[in-house]
Length: 404
Image (cartoon, rainbow, N blue to C red; front, side):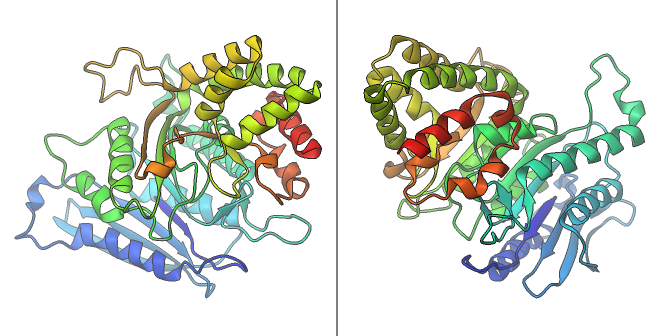
């Protein structure tokens, strides 16, 4: 399911042409000539795309295979414009129903479009109010959908695990979303998160190459962990080094432990910044770990490394080392590629250029590293995150921002 926010807002690049190009890439997977590919070996793939354009027109595209008719299908319908929640949740519900989704089937939702200041498909007013789907609202939407799906398909979830219905993967063809905050926010609703900790160029993901392996699997269909790693590789190799990109695949089942370890580091840092000399050193190490120019984020692993080497505080070094090891250290992996067992929190991470060598796949908000960042305008949005509510990270970074 690909939900495209292709509206153009003031100060953002137009997306209509990019949306049409990605639609054409998706369409090509289902319209390839029979003499080019063996249709009998095609996998059971359904793709649903809803495009919200600058013209105000919203269209839903469906691509799939009708086993009864024995042929490929492609349809398009105009959709009445509605509220963002109604549009997104209605799209997901309709896709689940129309695909005849079963418990053992796999599902992936991709949010496609501009993302700024903790919101998707947005335009910010002078007061900092976001007219879009902010990421806290997104989790609220997914919770309501999850409860509805559990009631509808309750018979599927009566086993001992009691696992609620979740997406296998939630992906973002959007900027700056591979963050600790997003991982903790979306953990109840998806098994994996696929996104970038920096910007995504307007061409976005190579949907034709990504979907080709699903439409025409090799020996068997890929599992979600295998597919996530596959997307990381295909995306990063689609751009030259002159157009630096990065993509990350995260295991959300471990998000609670991530939050716990990040909290221990935040507490140690918060205790240290009362001393002006140590505060200046910590602020500089944050700045050295910035994910990119003008971005109010730090790469978590790089920050941990800097704090271990140059923080000058044994407790901070201990907490930073523990967090960095958790993010990167794998368990036994032999024979477990299909299930994803043993992988660290950062299941896979790719980058295509030497200038991104300091990136390791996941970031944290730190507004003081970006000069001119209006952190007061969006603090209310940030403080709505589960991570901000359950840790002292917001207190730490906003204190640093005010003292910088």
